Length: 350
Image 1 (cartoon, rainbow, N blue to C red):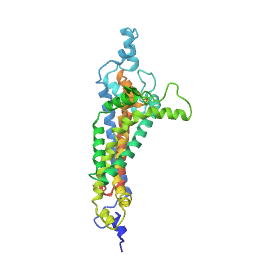
Image 2 (image 1 turned 90 degrees about the vertical axis):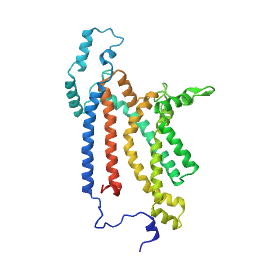
Image 3 (image 1 turned 60 degrees about the vertical axis):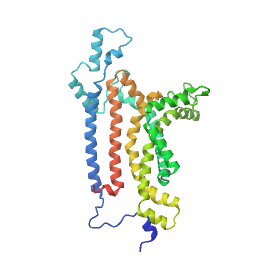
Image 4 (image 1 turned 120 degrees about the vertical axis):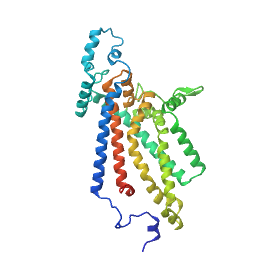
């Protein structure tokens, strides 16, 4: 006999003749198909990365030679050293071959391997983007849960409206505004937080150094969170609204369970699925979105490195950083599709 509690909770029913039960083999086939699509996307990115950056105006050799009295012969010698004297198609095949060997070349400006430069800068980017992602997800889920459960309330209207406004604000504009108000200061209001770099010039050691880095993270992290968390809020709110109309929630309420218990034990766990998959999908985009934030606050990460490469233009450095960010987005999207397929039985038969 089925108890009221069992009726209140969504349960996996026994498979009938028409049910399509998930199998490890089906999941593996789905994962392999997604992996194949990801490899094709990465291949297209490699092709596009090479040719798109060649359309940028400017001569790398002349830009690198600024302030140095170099003769035309010396400029030609520098072009041969960088491989820019070769036909474009030869440069392309060299780039593809080196990329397949995980050799992203040598930076024109820094005269160092691109992988070494990326290795030095990826830590600050992961610190900033990771911290921002954790805060944005936590804030978005918390506000989305309250807004969805109290649909139409003052909190729902305010939180949804504020998140949509922040989401629509250009990142660079919001960053400059926060820098001006909380970094530089306005009128009698002094600046509170540092807004350049990751540490002070005379950075202390030990725990004081951690506090110094944390103070430098406040403004860039706040900028990143403000333009990202709305996605998680809206998805969580929409999912929870859908769950509140389900029969098991109605039965749980009729059974006399407290409203907080119905939300915490029944509605929220089922509403979290779309948000969890969105987190995987947005990991790569958050790293890519940090480019603007890092440039504004001169944060020494991949975004700042990419900006420095565009100024030259440093083709090898641009290609390497852009390729890394794009591949991260593709891989995270693929992982999100596979996780969603494993967790949600409704998409397995699609």
